[in-house]
Amino acid sequence: MEDNIKQLFEIKPNQIPKSLPLFPLDNVLLLPFGKLPLNIFEERYINMAFDSLKKDRMIGVIQPKNNNNELFMMGCIGKITSFIETPDYRIVLNLEGVCRFVLQERDLTQKGYYQATINSSDYLEDLNSMEPQIDRTSLIHKYENFFKMKKLEIDKNILSDTSNLQLLSTLAMLAPFNKIDKQAILESPNLMSRVSTINSILDLNTFQVVSNNQSNKLN
Image (cartoon, rainbow, N blue to C red):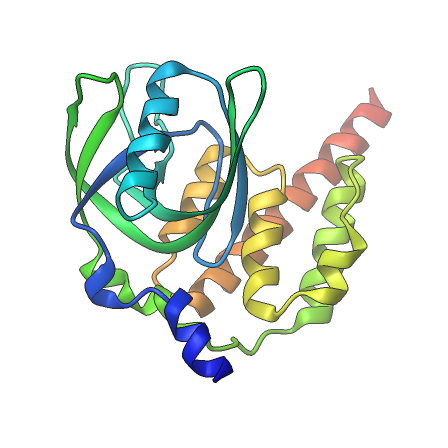
C-alpha cells in the first residue's frame, strides 16, 4: 500500500516536460532531490507560478551568465511541492529538484516570463533515488571547515537526518560557492562525478581562504 502511494508522487521519464516556464535565478543552484524555498513578488513570476500550478507544477531554474540576459545552457527542473499566498500579495513556494535539462530556446510570453523548450533526455538518470556510496564523514568535515572559514553555520539536522543523496544536494545548494562553481556542480555528468567536483571545489576554496588569511597576516 505504501509503495503504491509513493509511486503517485514519483515522476516518471514520460512526465518530464519538453516545454516549461523558465525562472532565471542568479547564483542559485537547484539539484535533483534538493529543496529550494522561493519568495515570489514580481508580477511576471507570480503569473509564472500560477500558470505552472494549473499544469504540471514544473518550473525550470537556470542561472544567468551575466547582466546581458544571457543564460547558462543547463538548468534543473523544479516541481512545486507546496505554496502559500501571503496577505501582501506574494507567493512563497517550495521547489523540489527533479532532473537537469539543456535549454534549447526560449520565448517571451505576454505575461512577461519566458517559456522554454528544453531537452532532458540525457539526464533521466537524475530521477533515480538510489543512495550513492560516499565518504559521508569526510565530506561533512570539509563542508564544516569551509562554512567555519566563511563564518557560517550548518544546520546540524541536515548533517544527521538526511540521506546521502539529499546531503549531496542540500549542502551544495546551501554552500556560498560562486556561480561558476555552482554551475560546474550542476553540469557534472553523474552523481559520482558530482561528488568529485564538490570535493575539488571545497579543497580549492579552502586553500584560497587559508592563503588569503596568511597573506593578510603578512601585510
